[in-house]
Amino acid sequence: MGETTTQQLEQDGRADFDFIVGRWNVHHRRLRERLKGCTDWDEFDGTTEDRSIVGGMGNIGEAAITLNATPLTATSLRLFDPQTRQWSVYFTNSIQGVLSPPMTGGFSHGRGEFYAQEPFEGKNIFSRLIWSDITPNSCRWEQAFSADGGRTWETNWTMELSRQAEQP
Image 1 (cartoon, rainbow, N blue to C red):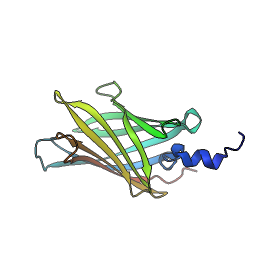
Image 2: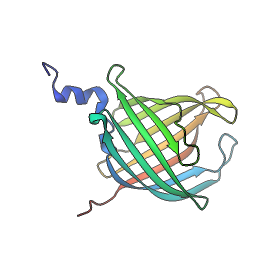
Image 3: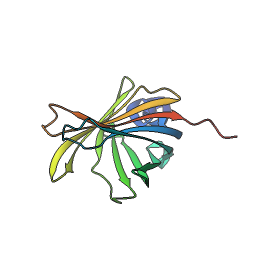
């Protein structure tokens, strides 16, 4: 590897999502209607299992929830680009079956921020994900939308994750 050490490679950002690998219980809060001034939330629980892929340059998470009495599975795909030192995050679920536009960003001081422009109800909006409060056994995920180019944000989904106990 020459003068590049494993520690230097990890410091470039490729290890930033290592915390998510494992099995998690997830408490969800989801705004019933987005970008409509709604203040009513649905709360529900689920699980997710995340594992490393492509030699640590990515990871994949598979989640299971029941939303409005309907079982739903969702997948998160996160890939690290060593050239830009940024992550691209994609989502799909068992209802739509297509990958979302990538959300790109990274971590600074233990907080991850990722942004995209995506279609929503016939218009392009900005979307933002934030990973925060990261510990070995818990973390927080938050999604927000902006219809005004990022001047204001409406948080519409939060997840509080707690690591499941190791199975013998």
